Image 1 (cartoon, rainbow, N blue to C red):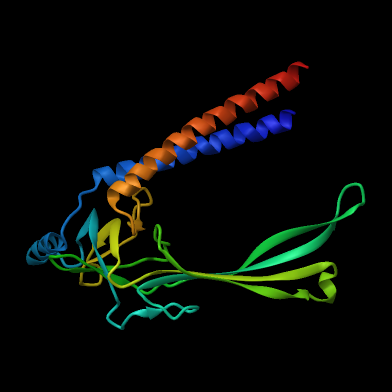
Image 2: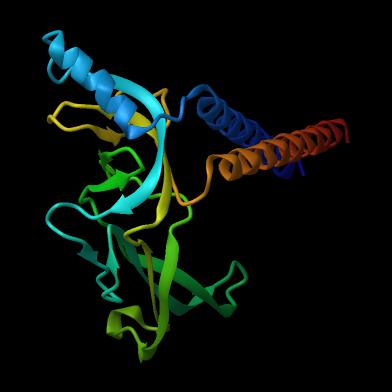
Length: 250
């Protein structure tokens, strides 16, 4: 029983850290200004006029519509949908035989991700005042649109060396951000390559968020997550500690 107690305590500690992460994310959003792109461009030009080129840095929020890269929009690999960003996964589902500690044979299902591919090409964000580049840096956006999910049944046994294993099939899934999608971005605006770009901050303590949700929706969700992780983590830790103490005293 003490092992179960220790596991619950560990889960409680994990819940505490998850709650802290949600709190820090929400506070980062509260602290950051939401700025029009034209105002950011004015700040950049002021530094350039003073002789500082490529030295502009500003952690802030930008809201606008997604716009394709100058080379043109991407095509989602599975569906062919026009987009500025995509992610595709392929998951293999298998049924296999296994022997338990008593020597009895059973079957179980497991899933293995064989492909998880995300586009890395940059795109742009357009508001009523201007345009700014977005460097996704491999970061998956919050709540992209799921446009494709298909399951293809397998062809039976996986082969001689996988005796007792049966391929149930593959699940193909795809998410995209389409041109024109309204986005909220929290990150660091810079002009290292000339034009303004918003991307992942250099400081690991600063947050990078790309979301199809509004700032208020994300903040409300963070409050709920923080409470759930805090209360749930505390409850698990207390129950786990009680189980450990009871086991030690009996």
